[in-house]
Length: 236
Length: 90
Image (cartoon, rainbow over all chains, first blue to last red; front, side, top):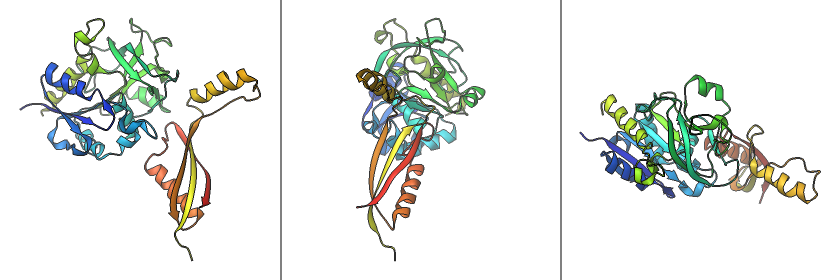
């Protein structure tokens, strides 16, 4: 049996093809790009909500897509324990759909930021980080205008181990200088209580092949390796 | 007797005081204060929506909009407050 992963495409998605490419050609699983109106959860072992500007970011980044039938389908997967990752705009969609806690606000600098950053793995017991050592520092790009993570319930997030990755310097130290967008506590990614759903502002699909990385690293691949491992373990 | 009438409801969405508002800060610090309006101590930015609907009366219009905004998360309760500014007949 082949592992089947859906990459859901909304009007305005981007890096959707990159995610499909990495899964099909780097990870060697069966990934399919699915237009949001045609997505049926029953056919898939996991799903990826890619980045971009779904529905033009109108009203608020992610809010229109959060009400789409595709997200209702994904909610079935969520409850069933299958892995779901929201990348960048996908992260915004998953917070608006309340799969994940908190919200993503406009970058403190008010600028669109596109650069390679370092992130440290805070929790390696999620569906997308189980193949990464805790406290590893990963090199990965960000590209967003609304990535400032905010929650009014930070204690709960910490108590429940829901912070997955934080922005750091290359030595893994958390500082204001290593915080690209003003995120609370340098948070770059969080997960749900059950740890099968995560949201990341950084783009792992852009950091999965050495030819695309300024340092020749492939750290993004680790998130997809973890996803595949998680699917195998739960017995797809 | 009540009947369906055309109403307009104006709403404003703005960040909660605990969430920083860099847009408002830039307007205040980098424009107003530099151009002699030091008496302006704070600016908060937001989003304004004018919603056209049919309702029985002003109160009915208000109830519909309040329910709609909460149900569909027109404002994000984690970060934003919603204010109904005006309700008036067209």
